[in-house]
Length: 180
Image 1: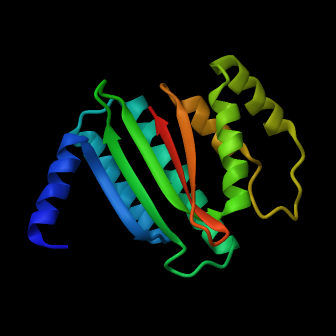
Image 2 (image 1 turned 120 degrees about the vertical axis):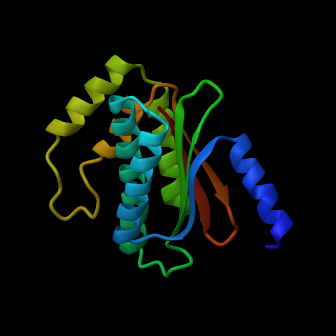
C-alpha cells in the first residue's frame, strides 16, 4: 500500500465514522488489548455507560466466537484472521461488524439463525433466551449454550445482520453486524 492509498483509507474511515478497525490473526491477548482501546474510544466519544457496555459486550462476544471457531477447526494464522470494524452510523448509533473465514455449511447455518433472530421482536427474543437458558447442555459439545447470538440480537437497537461470501474452496467469508 502506498501513502496515497493510506490517505484514501483514512478519509474513508473518517467518512464512515470508524472508531476502530483491525484485520489479522486474533489471539486472546489481542482481543483484550483491542477491548481496552475500545473502552478508551467509547469514553472519549462520551458514550452513555449502558451503550458503552453493550458495544463492548458485543465486541467481546463476536471476537471470542471467531477465535474459538478458528481453534476448533484447527485454522492456521491466515484462516484464523478476523476483521473487526466499530463505527458510528449517521444516526449516532454504534455498529460492531466482524468477519472471518468459515466452512460454508457453518456460515449458511449462521446466516439462517441470524435472520431468524433478526425477525423477532424484543419479547420473542427474551422468550427464546429464557428457553435456551433452560435447555440442558451437551457436555461433549464444542460450543457454548447458544446464548451468544440471542444476546447480541437482544442488545441490538437497530438490528443484527449476517452475510456469507462463498470463495469456491468450501469456505466463505462470514460477516456479522449489530447496531447498538
